[in-house]
Amino acid sequence: MNTILIVEDEKPINDLINMNLTEAGYSCVCAYDGLEAANLLERERFDLVLLDIMLPGINGYELLDYIKPTETPVIFLTAKGSMQDKVRGLRLGADDYLVKPFAFDEFSARVRALLRRRSDTKSTVLSLADLTLNTINRKITRGGRNITLTSTEYALLEYLLRNQGHVLTRSQIADH
Image (tube, rainbow, N blue to C red; front, side, top):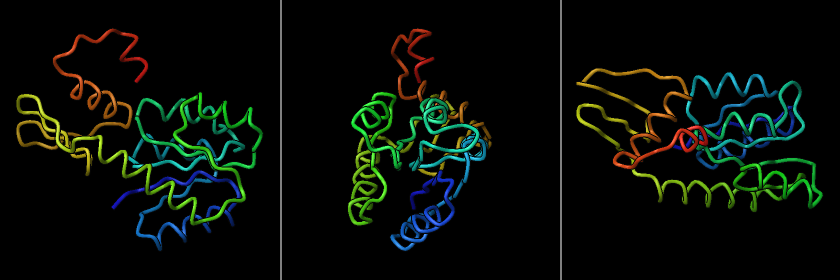
């Protein structure tokens, strides 16, 4: 089951998205401001983040910078509907951009398509010597013992395992 983080400060909208996605078979976690979302992202792994731009505390653009190293896909869900806003969001690294209000059928189709593309391109088990990383359940073991990592540490380890055998520059690693 895919787990989705909903970052929306308007409780009725957050609740409606949560209800519809839960009914569609997704597991959802809700955050109502950027700081709460950042704390959740540090502790948990998500398959998708639905992100409002205008949030109290840390705004959606700032939070997107925090999410990028985890390679978690992001869909902006926002009232900011100008072409400049859309282009900015996509250029900054969002995978999709949807303007509120939106039709749930279209939204649901975008979520399914993004999660399907992500699962098609990612292998689920990465290993090196006695170290194994399962990307589905985020379980890491070494020599049969479980290892617990922060979200950033996990993202870095996954990146390094996916790129083993390649020479990586410091800037390549910093970009991920």
